[in-house]
Length: 279
Image (cartoon, rainbow, N blue to C red; front, side, top):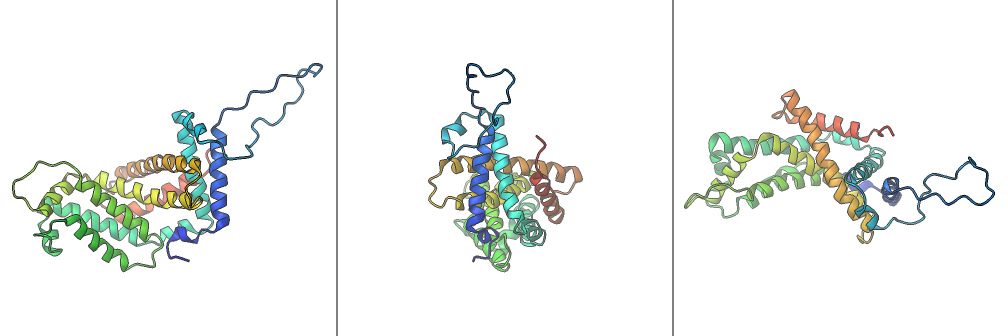
């Protein structure tokens, strides 16, 4: 068994995730039209079950026909189903003890701070990137060095993927060109353009999405069940909303530069999200 948290999910867990997602979709489908009453049947006779569960997976076309509100409920129910399964394996306790989430966020914030206040010169000098043609790759290697020191951390892969997503997306942001500027300096200006709020939001979103989408994918290794593919798409939107809500609380508390508190707020947000919503 691998060291990452999602690798401990067993076949029964994957089946439970799949079943829960199918039922979450069925809950959003229109109720079937009631059959016409038979001749001689008394008015007011008790009706049968309102919404029988389908015996097979609803077609992907069913997802396409859902309204935006129904798709949102479907995505949140699918995300909640994964969290329910993960919680049974100690997800919240494990994440509460994870230091790597905090350490990598500190590192990302240090990159951005140096870019904003020092022109990225300290980072360029520290990592020897003055003549680098690919500073993003250089930083990705430094990131791997940081995460490899905590190989036992159950969330290492998702943390690393979230940080790499920030580096990659930042490198594509547009900044005015400067003739003869070294690529590392250009990256510094791109990092400076990234707000502290956006950095934290993207980091949280990519981390949570990685944690929830991976078990869904593994519940169908052959990617043959298109309903799960649609679920992953809606879960991505749901995790973005989770990130947005967490960041709103972080900003309210004035803790954008406090990785430890950010970690706790995210943990609390996920616990709150997992609670079943009132009908």
